[in-house]
Image (cartoon, rainbow, N blue to C red; front, side):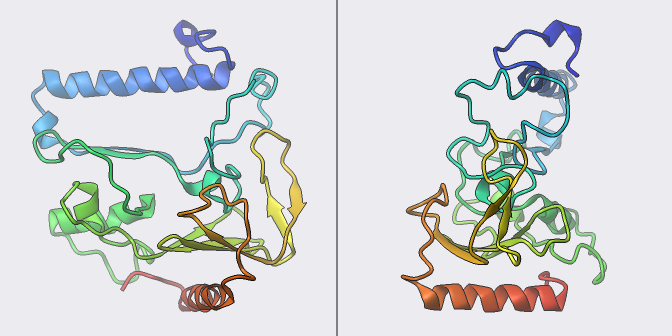
Length: 238
């Protein structure tokens, strides 16, 4: 529930009113860092744990006032799904005097903050901790020619065995029971019939609209094998 001063400030209801309150709050934090002369000593990370959802039980008229707005933009799905709309979210880092302004196309994940900050501070992670965290510090700091992740496992919030697996521009999604969760953010939560395995070329089809498994069976099999091994290993951090 947004504070009263932000209620009614957007055309899409309380949910988007909350977003502009979030924007204001972040602005206040940034101004405070500048006022206290701490901006050059502070790494700020702004991110989200999952994509948008408009229909998770709150009586906030989010669906009624949605209009033509798509919170996930061009991406398919939203929270609870393994499609890009469920997991591809803003990830912004700011460290005045250290990180140059710009946009990176490298793949990083919120879970990588543990290994990355471990590298930054020189404090080693225990081997049995943060099993899927990777050191992507160079990418987070905007270093030239920095490399992010070479792969990423995406999972919904349940134990249904639904996964997404990305390597470069290729993405495999796994739906063991032939059901995909919440494929369209605007509709009610629903299970949609799909094939157990779907393959997408995100470079050509970021909206995951065309299954290209028939055209690239060798790619699908390679991704499937690698995903299954990572799941069996129980970890992806070296």
